[in-house]
Image (cartoon, rainbow, N blue to C red; front, side, top):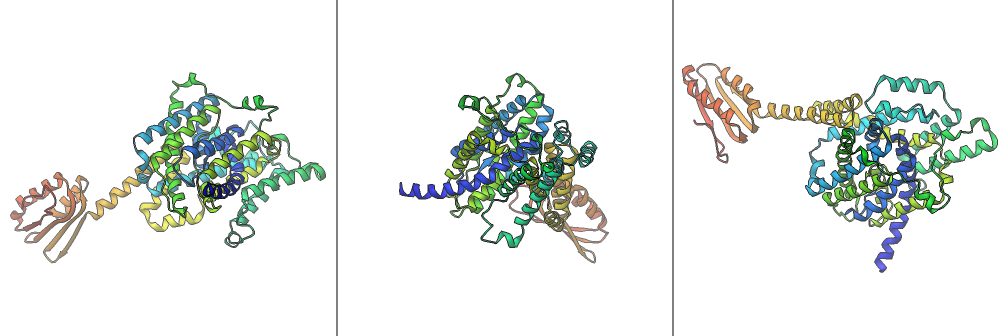
Length: 514
């Protein structure tokens, strides 16, 4: 009991900091997804309380994620009503339960890092483009970028941005730019080391400053005062019964809609990958070096998404920003994640009036800065320095996602990465050296039928009266096609007066006849 109280106090203290970071992010991600703002809060509550209770992670915090913003916006744009999207969230959660049952927790290990970083970079670019109009105060309901952004980076988006620039709202622009400057200031190395500010959540600070500017404008400068359409709009309940009436429920009549199933599968795949990568990163921050069971985490996320979809919330993943905040704030157990979910519930239930004073420009600034961190220049330079086999799939993934959608873009990125993997293996599996008329053909790694043309070419180009050693002793595997090529060469090499020696790998079951 004494240990529980001691750890409980640490967890509760950490949960307050996580709550202060999560609140603006839940609202901002809902805004960026084109979903009702209340849905972001619901996802945050479910991610904290439900996923926190079922998860095997001690420090991971779940909720709506910026990485799913494009997927959600795409789904909402394609589906006839929001209730159909909620059905897709439930389907996604059910698929995650299936992933867990199939022990698919290792799936994240098979996605090349260049593709994952490319996915995050593309999401960062889309977040910046999508939130720019909100940053300058163009919040007209007729301008829904998510309808355009769902199919990629089309000209209509830039046309909308150009129109947005023409109708700038001065008050929103001031709040948005000031919020961005504060977020940038808090990321400066010298500031991050400061004891005075390192524990202050920058997203919360910009929200408070945004509210302060709005209240000041109301008293002293009505010209800069923002209208209701530029502010957060959460429903206000008169009583408990009225509060529960704000929740939205899925419409199961769309269960046969193929777009619902496509969206559900996409959500399940992307959310699962993001969760697995997040828990891997958070485990490295755990001072006790505890390891999260990946399959149990997929099950917890599946349960959370099913419940979130049933009551009107956005899809959920383990989120690295909140999880890292939780770890650095001194949390000891998953009670911190649960406490932060309870705080979100209390906040939206009892103080929605205060939340409705938050300018959308501040939330847009948070998301734009998040987008910048996902695609910042040092990351691009680091991939360039790693070589073309890393840099080109990284760029292809970004371009493919911008030109199509997230899932297709990832598949294209995976295919391009696979081509480079095969190319590297193709080049390095066959090495040829010679001194005068003495030739050494060394077979290494896995030598497959893909290497057949180069081996045939090298063998046929060896001049008459030469000595050849074909060294397969260091090859892990040699295809039957390759063995056939070598055996055929052995049969007619004597016609050119070429002597051939084959060094076999005794560990292989099959080898060419010498």
